[in-house]
Length: 416
Image (cartoon, rainbow, N blue to C red; front, side, top):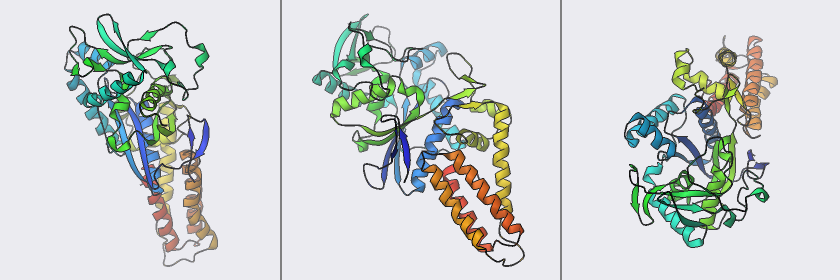
């Protein structure tokens, strides 16, 4: 049985979907004001492995990748480059989809944009106003709408926030994000009211303006999900503010639990440091390709470490991991079909062929231990090749082993 580490409960739990045989999965897309970097793609590849493994197990997966294309950073970048916001974000989204395909990431069923989900955001805000979780407040000429976390019982439960440290004095945070702040202890914004000079805004039932980042993800959830999801995945940064804001918005609207299992991938470091658009120490896929890296090797580098462990990218480490993959591919080629007529099958060979699938699933079922699963394949296939050299591996053994490896490579997308 598949077990996943649930950030919400802080436990390794047996996965059981809300509907038998089906999985509804939501994944955070990047803030698309700049191109996604390799840290973003590490998370996307982990999510792809999860989706593919669920499908390998027989589940039908319905997946969403949210695209945040209207936020403070995007507006500032469009202003800086002196281009239309849509032109800016369309460029980044096109690159994102193209690079996901190169990394053999399945394109999700839904790629909603916050710019096309404004009506739903307005609807959610209206409900929050009616229920008393949200309120209007004018700040510097903007008729904004804010959410009071103290009105939501259990706020901060995903992160494990200590609400006893919440300030007694009313505080409001007016921007989408605050660089360097893990938590904004106060009321967070839901709606940016219009002010003279604003270039991006909508005329709505709650006034002129635009939805904040904090309500955009809930607004982008497809109607078919009905505010019920089995899994939500993202990077570890989303455990600061963002996902607890999402929980507070959705569960205040519905009055019911929202997501069953939250999964968060650790950072990808660059030469030992966290990558940051603000710091400028970032590498993009094109940078790696210019250094003669390949898409297939990049994907394998991302998955050859557990998703909850930090992954440090250095070219030395990258080359070491590439050699592991190429060495295994050579072993698989040597497995081939037994030569020299029909060779006798040994009991040991049959056991090892069976072990390919058994060991892979054992490791993957333990919270997606991809590296351990791959290493077990390497060991088992190497032993099969040695049996082949001793004329103790039949053609049927070889074919069965290769068939199992091809089934497994649907998940890994790295062997063949």
